[in-house]
Amino acid sequence: MIIKMSARVEGWALFKKGIFFKGFITGMLLQLAIGPVFVFIINITLQNGLLNGLAAVAAVTVVDYLYIVMSIIGIGALLEKPGLKKIMLVVSSIVLIVFGVLLVNKGINFVLKETSVIVLESYFKSFATVFILTISSPLTIVFWTGLFGNKAIEYKLDKKGLLVFGAAAGLATAVFMGTSVIVLSTIKVVLPLLVFKVLNIFAGLVLISFGIMRLVPSKIKNSVNPDLSPDIDM
Image (tube, rainbow, N blue to C red; front, side, top):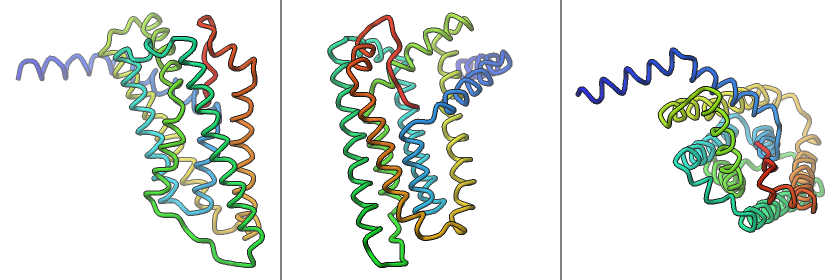
């Protein structure tokens, strides 16, 4: 009982110091760097509606928290080896390109079909596809490790402080993307069918572009240089 009370008091002390608020603001600023996952979630929301969009947001939030915890307990340091980082970068790029090609193919088939009905995906499929797309970029762990290292020094945080900071930063993902999904779902009803037909093609081309840019030799070279931050799309 005494231990539980002590933990609560310490947690409240960190909250009062503004660590939670600082973590949340940091997380929100990171969300402004729009990446392929966000574009993919927008596509899911406009194609399938609010609940599918929220399922997708839940998936990326789960992965973010998973990577945050792994970073805090030190797994990110194991991924700092240049050769391993290069392999992970190539794999994540290939996953983006494959997802993009599948979306473009789906969009082309949809455009060619003379139909006025959009076949909705299941909530599980929306969750699963975003989960796979997000977790296919383990270099995110290295990014969080570097960020937490800087913030630990800046705010003089121990591991408990980093957990509070990380929890707030992860919450920002859910809040930012969840709010975006809710707003976007309201305009779904006014968009013409043609927009939905070409949306998959557009989203697919964006994913392919991100994947190709990650495979540019200079990007790979930078990613294996320990003095530079990894190229991560949040």
